[in-house]
Length: 66
Image (tube, rainbow, N blue to C red):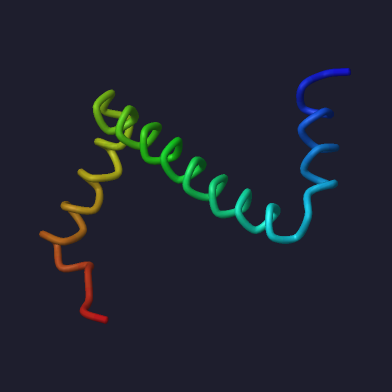
């Protein structure tokens, strides 16, 4: 049996209060992983073109107040 299947089975058998605690933990875990990936992408310059486009739009008056 692979690890993913074992995890799925274990999670499906959690009591309601443990499942709620697991959801909270996993949301925080997932958010931290996403933040780390975002920071890596920024440091690698992967978002530079988007930032440049946004600044160009701002300077050319294509941005409006909400």
